[in-house]
Image (cartoon, rainbow, N blue to C red; front, side):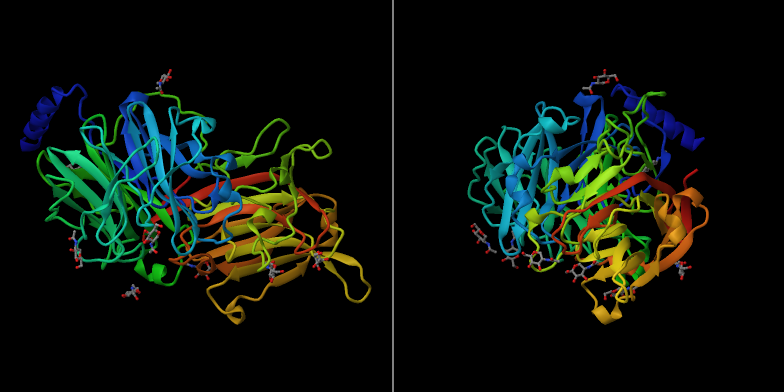
Length: 583
Ligand SMILES: *[C@@H]1O[C@H](CO)[C@@H](O)[C@H](O)[C@H]1NC(C)=O
Ligand SMILES: *[C@@H]1O[C@H](CO)[C@@H](O)[C@H](O)[C@H]1NC(C)=O
Ligand SMILES: *[C@@H]1O[C@H](CO)[C@@H](O)[C@H](O)[C@H]1NC(C)=O
Ligand SMILES: *[C@@H]1O[C@H](CO)[C@@H](O)[C@H](O)[C@H]1NC(C)=O
Ligand SMILES: *[C@@H]1O[C@H](CO)[C@@H](O)[C@H](O)[C@H]1NC(C)=O
Ligand SMILES: *[C@@H]1O[C@H](CO)[C@@H](O)[C@H](O)[C@H]1NC(C)=O
Ligand SMILES: *[C@@H]1O[C@H](CO)[C@@H](O)[C@H](O)[C@H]1NC(C)=O
Ligand SMILES: *[C@@H]1O[C@H](CO)[C@@H](O)[C@H](O)[C@H]1NC(C)=O
């Protein structure tokens, strides 16, 4: 009875604010599965009550993705703010580093325009520029502007964007303490930086976001570094110049010193929905602290959602991040049609039919230097993707330059259990070293490959096709890497395409196998490789699954053809032994 009265009472209160309060419903984390770090999200009533989020893209291209959702649980890729090299030409040439590129961004909507302010890192020490992209249509890649350089007065990262009531624009950024400067969004000029808040005593104060609520400025930050001690904390002040008062409920969210399945929780953003309910997003890493310490977290940092209660004049309080949570999710009009799903959380069924284009959620490693290296259905080979081999393999060597390009095309691994397969058409290679294959790729120094390689027989100089499974992991000694597995491709398989499979069989291992596409159920198991090879806290990026073609240093031209690209989600592990199965 008491519950009923409370419900009626709260319903009555809400009746004044037009929309009925939704009942709590269950949702699962992560909401953006697979590598989606440093989320920044907004709710935009002017765009049909849609939520928009961006996440960090580092060297992946297209970069600065913008996802859209009506219900906070189904997300589509609306556009990528960085989608053509002309917006920031240096992205194609400036760095061969694996862990630079586009860092954490802030996404905001103000007065009809979407703003994405981010940090572009192009050399390890103090090569950091702040760049701003804007659009009036977040569903249209081409409408995003070229990069406007915004002054980075201290050479820091994680720029925020906040409009004060008087229209002035404030950019907070990382540092001890967090600092901020007034900026001019038309010229990119920044004023004299001023100190804000040191946080609650942990290192790496970063990821600041400012909000104004009930006559307080609130400053939300990340602290403790992006690993197991990560957290989100918040402070408030009557003035942007401080003094800042730390919340008595800090940290707002964290998983540090716990055994929770979702670890490294931190780097948040907060927003309220059409019903006035508050939500937080953060990055988190699945698997618990033990697997994290063993670098077994190939999907790396994913985006999670949690409900926040934030009473008038009071402090925000958040529910701890778990795989299954409850909260007042927005109720979307029933039967509402979603745009064609272009989110990587979906399966891929891609047959490269003539006239189609590369799915827009697929990623390259850096903006392709030679876009024609990826051609769908060339006239001689309809229903294939032609991969014009790069001279460099997907590791490259010391002579590798960004403009040399890598022939590698990928999607994000978004599930604990999945099957990824691609058909490789034999007959591509005439010269020893020619190789076409599939990869679990985190970056050039961390990947697991299953290639079909042309080898020369030393006895009679004949050319043979072999399967080669091998791992590249620059963080361990070569002698500790699993030995490559090299097996001949059965002679009987030369007539039809060869299907290469990568299976995520559990949290700790990938299985590599192959079959003749004409007898795809007769699979040859090739290798089982530990996921620890493609994990680690300083890699920043998470597993991508894709296809590549290389001459392994050969100067000749070589074309590989792949077809029938499939990614089939099987299940998510969202707690120790707790699975969500795909039907
Ligand atoms: C809102 O949704 C309606 C109906 O689906 C559509 O016609 C309209 O273009 C949308 N408006 C915006 C701003 O997204
Ligand atoms: C980075 O460069 C900026 C501007 O050139 C300078 O003010 C700042 O001191 C530099 N920071 C470091 C860590 O060298
Ligand atoms: C932050 O900490 C440093 C070092 O303890 C101190 O010098 C500085 O005054 C503090 N700044 C703020 C804004 O609290
Ligand atoms: C993980 O590593 C940290 C830092 O070395 C350590 O404090 C912690 O006890 C480890 N946790 C587990 C579960 O292994
Ligand atoms: C709904 O979920 C929120 C967030 O967990 C919680 O604060 C609130 O008490 C729940 N409401 C009901 C009616 O269960
Ligand atoms: C890639 O090429 C480099 C340089 O030729 C070589 O050292 C490395 O072993 C190759 N790696 C792979 C995975 O093919
Ligand atoms: C995953 O599967 C491999 C191969 O069967 C096995 O060695 C490993 O222990 C499994 N890991 C887990 C967490 O079950
Ligand atoms: C490719 O060309 C370069 C530069 O001319 C040469 O150094 C290298 O040996 C050649 N590589 C092969 C595999 O022929």
